[in-house]
Amino acid sequence: MTLPSVSIILVNLNGRHHFEKLFESLRAVDYPGDLLEIVMVDNASVDGSVQWLDKHAPDARTVQCRQNHGFAGGVNVGVEASAGEVLVFLNTDMRVEPNWLRELVAPIVSGEADCTSSLTLSWNGKVVNFGGSAMNFHGIGWQVGMDDPDIEKYRKGPCETLFACGGSMAIRRHVYEDAGRFDEDFFAYYEDVDLGFRLWVLGYRVLYVPSSLAYHHHMSTSRRIAVQKIRLLQMRNPLWLVYKNYSDDVLARVMPAAMLVHHKRMAYVLHLDDRGYRIDARDARGKGKMHESFLKMRASKRSVGIPPPAKADMLAMNDFSTLLDGMAAKRKSIQGRRRRPDSEIVPMFRIPFWAVEHHPEFANMIRAMMDAFRLDEIFGTREIVVDPRVASDR
Image 1: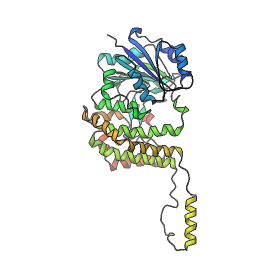
Image 2: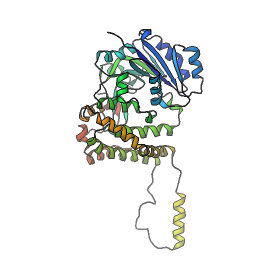
Image 3: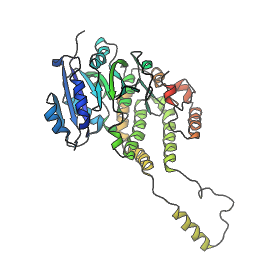
Image 4: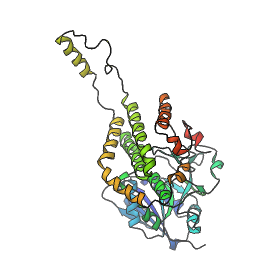
């Protein structure tokens, strides 16, 4: 088998503390050195990352950015600075097995796949972090096998999967370019789900390759960022990927339901209390102007500040509408080049009716959406999934 040249692209934001283990494992990778380059994109870190790289990793090409481009933009900066026939994206909080790269690119070289993704375990190797992919109808992606200690169950493969995890994936350069790269408007989160959906729409094939093994410090960067900043991205980006990638007839039924789900989730973090908002028999009793003034004063005192997660949800909707023209242009390009119908893609969702909130009535609302918009006709199931760990690994 003739091996292709490979560019391993890493994106860093104040992750210097991960570098030693990361580079130790990369230097042990079983791949010809003359076919391999490492490109580190630094998103304006302030922890001395660049200085560490200059001193301890002269074998890596460091691209120092003046601002934080996010994961999607950072990867694309790295792509511009790289030369490999195959692009490999790897998180900086990873370590890999020596055969990780050979196994990851093998299906691409053989023509079995256009994009691949590794089996990823927790840092200590005791539970699964990524054993394939799944998604619900409104765009929330799921890493199959998350936290499952039964690792052997996920070593079967390779097999088709909806999307490759951006933390450890490979894709042929011309395929990445043809598909439109990671969408930089996403900044971070769900850009890999969006790309995977798009690849299938455009006629490409994504494989999960469990013989390629990596270990991950899950959420090591995200846990240091304010919750509301993460929530904005995680509420906005699924709506974008739904809007861009579904065919017209499917989108007409999915999009209204997705919007209603979004508003229901926002209502939970607002802790909406309808007391004082429902007209009943005690209203309009005509007790005089002084009583009316008292009621207005009492209503004003009930006003409270908007919780940060709820404000993030509102900003997500604002972003969705503000950038809709740009997303519409992207959608037109994707749908104009469609090579595969949604009917062939949605079986890979695995959990289309995953109720992501644990509130008791949320699953009932998902069922109501299914019935109102006849979504079961699209996805071929009526199963409401409350715990994706139980359903998605079947």
